[in-house]
Image 1 (cartoon, rainbow, N blue to C red):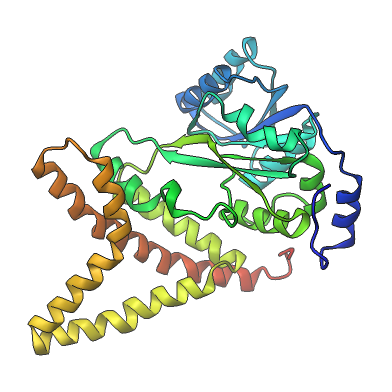
Image 2: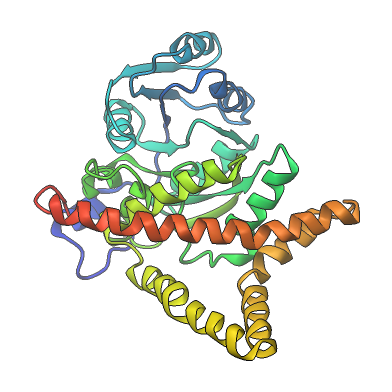
Length: 344
C-alpha cells in the first residue's frame, strides 16, 4: 500500500486503500503536433524496447504536416492508437490519452526524445512490484552539434546533481498508476508550460514519495540556437508565473540583476580593479557547475574549440535569465486575469 500523508485529501486516502499490491498492463502515452519526421526516433526506440508496451496511445493536437501519416506506419510494429484533439494543449492531450488507456500503469514520454532500450522495463518495474505508485525516470542530453554539447552541460543537470528523494520527473520520462492520476484530477488543463511540475506536486500530495529510476533514460536534444533557447525559457518561466512556481528563485534572480549587478558596475566605474574582480569571481561561481559538466563532456576537444565552448556558458546563462525575467511577470499577469480558472 502506498503511504499517504495525514493531511491528504480523503479521495486520495480511499484511492491508496484500494490500490492492489502489484499490477500489470502498461500504456505508453505521447502527445504530438506537427512533429513530422521527428517522431521516428521516439517510435523506433519504442520498437526496440526490451519490454514492449501493451498499447501506445498518441494524442495529436491538430497536426497539419505528415505526422499522422508517419505514425500510421508504426501500427505494423506497435499496438498504436491515435486520438485526434485539434487545439488541445499538452495537458489536455495527456489527459485524453490517459483516459483512453486500458492499462492500469501509464508510462509518459514526449516526441523528440529517444528512449534507452530498457526504459519501459525499468520505469514500470517498481510499480508492478507494488513498491510505489509513481516512478521518476531520468533524462540525458543528446547533442548533435558542439553548441548543443555546451547547451546541454549548461541547462541540464547531471545525475550527481540531483537528490533522488526530492527529484521531480519531467513527463518525458515518468510512470504512474492510472488510479493515482485520477485521484489528482489529472494534468492541469489551464496550464500550457510547467504542467508536469504541477502534476508532480499533486502526485506527491496524493501518494507520497516517488521511486527514482535513473536507468530509465530518455535522451533529449538540447536547443540548437540561442533564439530557440530564449523562446523555450521564456515559455517555461511564463508557465512558472501562471502556476506560481518558485517565487523565491525568481525574486533572487531579479535582485541579482537589478540590485547586485548595478552595484558591481558602479564599483567597476569607480574602483576598476575591485569591481572587475568581483564581477569575474561572481561569474565564475555562477558558471561553476555547468563548467564542471562541460569539462567532462569535452575531453579530446582541441584547445580553441574547448575555450570557445566554455566562453558560451555565461552567454547562455545570461540569455536564459533574461528570458525568465521577461516571461515570469507575463505569467503572473495571466494568473491574476484568469484566477477564476485555476484549480489549486
